[in-house]
Amino acid sequence: MNPAYPGSIMRATLENCSVGTKYFVFRWILFGLPISPKELKVDQFAKVLTLKRSLTGKALNELEANGYLSVELHFSGARGRPKRIYRITEKLGSIAWAEVKIYFPNLIEDLLTTDLKSAAGTRRHELKLPARVLLAVLLSYADEGGVVQSAGTAFLAEKVGVSNESIRNNIAKLKELGYIRQVCPGISSKKLIGTVGSAFVLNLGHSRWREAAVRSHLWLIDAAIPGNFPLTFEAYSVVNLARKSRTTYQPELARLQNSLNQLAPDFEIADLREIRDSLMEDRPFRIADRLQFELEMAASAILTQHRADLGAGTLVYYLEIVNTHVKSKIVPQALFENRNRACNLLIDLMYQIAWLIAANTLTLIKTQLFGGSTGKLLMHHPVSVQNPNTGLRGCRCFAVELINDGAEYSTGTQIRLAKEPHGSLTVIDSVPLDPRELDDVTLQRFALGARPI
Image (cartoon, rainbow, N blue to C red; front, top):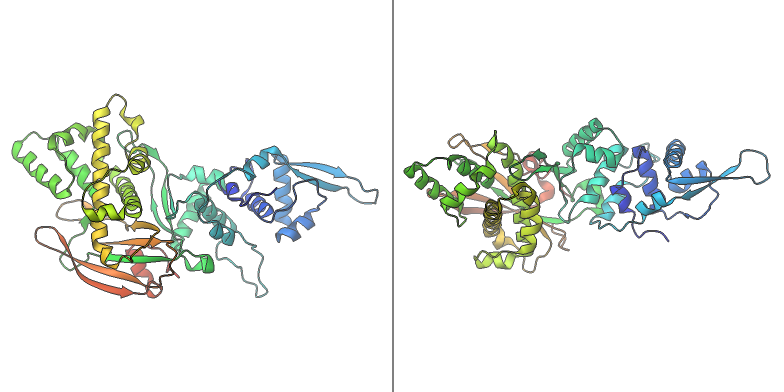
């Protein structure tokens, strides 16, 4: 029997095989070719899979050499070379039939359709094969919002079958063309988060997907009112507070307490002292960008799964989000051996901040949130800029996207904010817009990649 969908091939590592061989195996299984003994020549394989003969021959040779195929020569009695009977070995079969949850099989199939030139002499895809397979690998690891967690260069090179340099070049190309909306670099820290590879936010609504593209609704939130500085990222505020909490000067501690209250979580300054060493490194702010990304991913999960509770205004702890986002990605317990109190305080603090990010975001978009809307709500932040007054980093613009909720929205909303003297935000304008008419500069400002369909 053939697998329902060959997505597991995208996650597999084919030892000593090139990117073309991975593409060949995907199309072989996708087309459901027989795996029992079958007399097929290279030309026949190429014709059935609509692949070039040179790619097909190289792929079969690599698969045979590395134990993924066994080959039996069949002598028919006629003159000429014997025919070759190819059998999938257990080594390849265990990969092809592995059960893997794939959220976007249609996008992967659209990427990996035939690359033969059309009658007009043009390629069907603007991307060359290595970039397409790389994007397919990323899609195979993406969650329902198109987010890929911890995929480093060496890891992707192994999965795709190319060099590290090729991965870096193709990631840059995919970002330039809008297939990747955001790349959050990996970090290695012994204090917080741990060692993680890069994270990617993919553009599921890219125009090149055509009918396979995932529809969504957008809120573009613009705080770039004249005279306003960037809204500081919560992660920078936390790290800055921890850095300053080394002081014992009472008036300074009082000011820090006030700053913590503005950040909004329910914490005593003594608790912040308890965890400050967990946030401090030689360059303390270097963890802030990744921390902000993870806080926003946790906030996106809360927005998606618990919008009703956010509207009630009371903090509620959800164990699945604490475990999957805070404990596993922000405060891994392996880094806190014999320091349970510091670990628990950090988990509590980070969850509270994620909850507050979600609650504040919902306040901005709830008047335009469609009744009964379902699907993944995902936050998009562009690259941060520095506030010259505070030295902390943040951004003026960000977007919220409602993904794959079953409705074909063609409009979005742009919300402009005004910052009051006491620091609160007030919506001063709400403008309907058509995302298809947004210019590339605007899309880049809001970290949305290429123009959506």
